[in-house]
Length: 118
Image (cartoon, rainbow, N blue to C red; front, side, top):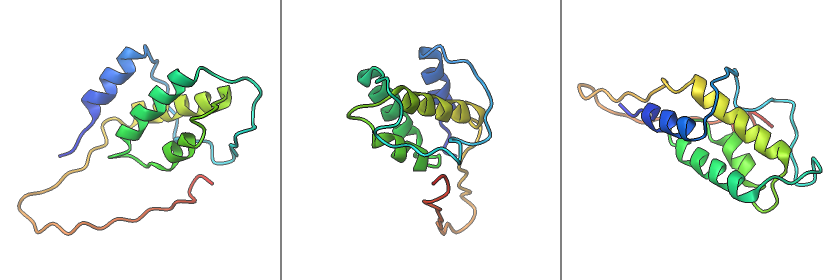
């Protein structure tokens, strides 16, 4: 079984992050670009947060994190808010795991919808 619960709990504790439930990692009607919002946020904080989220995408949908990664050069507060929303989603789904049963033949299949949030 692949589980990232321990990593997620440690990460959220380091950030003193409050657990607030959200059903999706991003608002589906949100359109992000480099010019949206006026105030730039602290780039180092944003890069560390998105970098940690990239690690988490091993077992999670990675479209939102890939989208947020596009704004590493000059992140704005709205981008940071979206990254925090992804954290809320991750905190809600930290018990989701990938289970591999050893008694059966493993045939790995996958499907993704890259336009899900776009």
